[in-house]
Image (tube, rainbow, N blue to C red; front, side, top):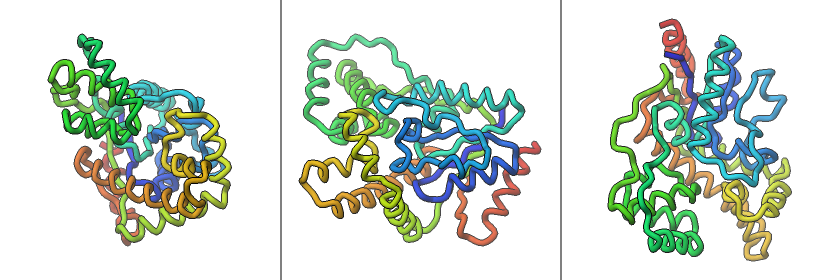
Length: 303
């Protein structure tokens, strides 16, 4: 079974620097497991690795799609598996790095993301279409959570298309959209989940947002606004500036919203990893922890 190293964890916890260090150490190449970094030109708001930071390590699924297109978990699953095969063919270690838990899970396990062609009534289609018009992504997801909580926990609220599809299925059939069988791993993977104490993590998130502002996040968000209501414009770091551009809030309020939403997202990411994936937890600021985990990875690579 193909070995795959996975470095996961919340935003701003240090995944990028560690992934490059380990790629050099273990002859690896990196696949981005982030739902927003796939888009071209969305560099600052997504905290995309800079070319000079890559240190010559090839990266996959970065700057991969135009920011106007929809990109689903199923798309990532297909593209990610292709990238793993390409890296393995070169005799290198595939290293997946990211914080989008559902993307990672769909890639590592034999999830079947397509659905059977249920007969969806015209009335249900119209009802869900109306909700899509009237409700925010979060409100639409809450509708699904009320009816099919298990499935809701596996779909990101921003993935409106999939949330709508799951609603259509549960409203038409009364059955869960979620597959019933237990998915099996497709790779011999080692999952390392980065975390640190809450105060340090939140400080790093706040500092990162300030740095993003210095690097030109406002201009990037303004450019994203011109794309219209596309999937990429709903990401944290962009959507918070829309009320500022329309004069509803001050710039300071918009920046504070980015920080707050980023902290809340980090908390959700950690909850997801704790509940959905089993791995080795690593706090890079705890003395001796990195060395301990590196030994564990070294042993896994040998076996």
